[in-house]
Image 1 (tube, rainbow, N blue to C red):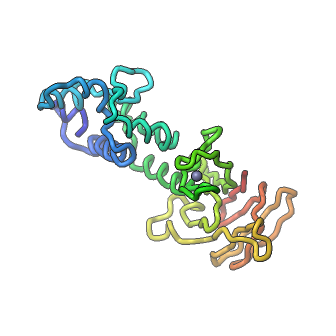
Image 2: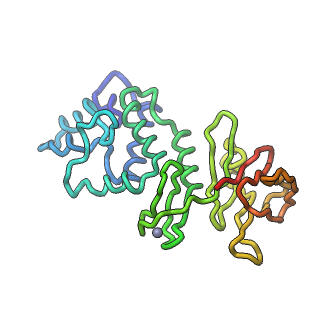
Image 3: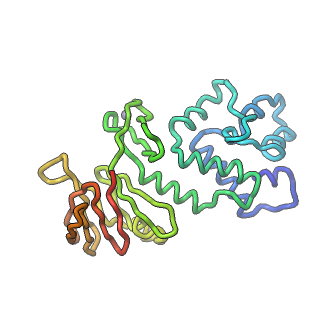
Length: 261
Ligand SMILES: [Zn+2]
């Protein structure tokens, strides 16, 4: 429940109060913990209505508030899982959004994280899945992490090749290119409706004779235009593949994506 409702301020449940509840729910799913359960809640001896009102409404402090450190996680084994999940498994982009939701979003309901912001982030994370080359555990590749390690076997992860999409007026989006990764309609049109968003337009495929090489196969009904790093232009007809090498630019349905490594 949003802090203003817990306090009993003169307000009613609304989209804005729902956005706080949504952020708490997402935090639970990822951290298995409540964002306000730190030292302050740990010191409470009687978990009654008054205590809940204090922690959730009158003095809600995010356990990882960058400025206010009074509600950090206590050194108790019960709080270890949340710490581990935050520090070693949570991508930095998700940490940033949780921090926004539970600091400025708590102080000012008008600055809460919207559904659109969560959706954009989770679609980006879905497109960032990188299997560890050693143990095959699924990792979420993080462009802001200089030396990322596999969460499971702790070996360092190579920076993967990816297809970068630039949309006007929107943050950049990328698709990590691993074997079987699929180029979808939502990649070339971030406003696509749900019915068409997941329509497959292309797929990462291995080279027929050299397993070290791989390409992108056009699974759509219209040709793509491929521009190589040396500016050579070629058409990629439906069902054909183009070699995936750094610097390649693909024009698909009016949008140009670049292959970076
Ligand atoms: Zn691994």
